[in-house]
Amino acid sequence: MKDNSLQLEKAKASALAIQLEKAKSENERIVELLKKTQISLQKQTQHNLTLQRQFAEKEKAQERQAIAAAKVKRDEMQNLREELLTAQRDLTKQLSLSKQREQEHEKQVNRLKRQCEQQENDRSNGESWRSMEQRTNTLEKCQSELLVLVKKQMKLIEILKEQRSHARAAALLGITEKTFVKEVIA
View 1 (cartoon, rainbow, N blue to C red):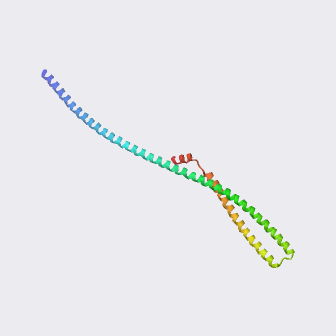
View 2: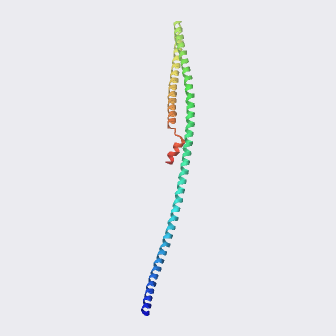
View 3: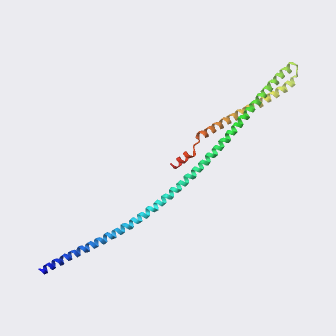
């Protein structure tokens, strides 16, 4: 019985040894798999960190570009404002000059009327035909000069109106720096 019991114990020990070997090899396989998984995870983590750094660098570069673009736009807006102010000043000056020219034109018209009246008086006083022709020629020249002046004034007035409309359009199109930066970043 002792032999049987001993053999039984040996068989159990042998079976346990086989199970132990299987468990060891399974354990080694699992440990190897864990090492491979850990290495793979480390590589993936490293790759993710690299991608995050690249993304952060791209984001910073885009932010710098947006800030630079916003600065350029701000400078352009400032230049437009200055141009608008200059145009408004010029428009005011040109309007003033136009009024002065109109007044001069009225004075010349009145002078011509007086000359015409004087010619009528001279004609009635028996002035010679030659002097009348000279005065008529003079008056015609004055009249043509006045017409040229009137045309120039009309052109100037049109230019002033156009500048005024440009100034109004620039004022209407004016946007604030904050809204522009929001639009650029969005």
